[in-house]
Length: 299
Image 1 (spheres, one colour):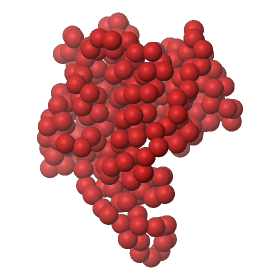
Image 2 (tube, rainbow, N blue to C red):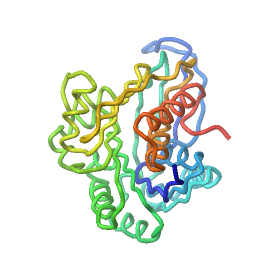
Image 3 (cartoon, rainbow, N blue to C red):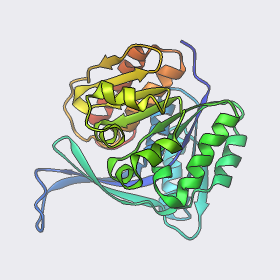
Image 4 (cartoon, rainbow, N blue to C red):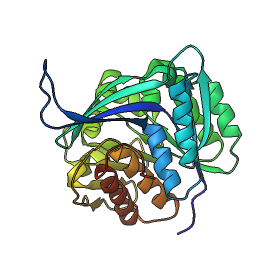
């Protein structure tokens, strides 16, 4: 395998407030938790995990002109991520409250400045990295009208420059709101589409994972269905279906696990790994992510 060219990641930069609950949430009362604050956002997390694999990565996004935004940029800089990030004066840096318990997480989100990411900024950022070989887009950028133009421009500009492309479908509820047909039209002919089990059901119906992947491969050249503890499935238009088991680890916090998985998959695949090897690397990083609190690689 060879070292991949620079990866450009486009999407959200967020402050995560993570509460790892001690037991079931007691609605209307108190529940004990270990609470932490730190960097999050699907795109920012993926970029940090890519940098941790020794691959050059540029993050394109937006933060507020506030202390939270400055803290998020400092964290990413320490993680080795090159940031092409807009500072938005009239919007705060996005924040997500994450409730983690029993291997699941529930998120309450204020996307803030992420909604102001512009197509012009994306265009400028791509022009500044002539060594880029791949663009990875967090679909959160597509799923809100405010940032949709930036997401669509990112995919179009990548194709114009000859970059390969990938999209992480992001989240089932907003996918359901925009509709499967609309979303699949936006991401048509991307080189790789990543979906989890819930997202695959929204986009392809209640089929088995391999059948979901085959259905979605009419839109994307390659599809990976992430199934959590049940592993993952790779479907390619030209090769047999490939499956991989999940690594068995003690689950502490699943926040960022899909982002780590995406980083492992991308860095291996872009380096020339086979689907089997790429899935193996992805599941390794996903397991590492769920075994620690927080969404980013540990220092």
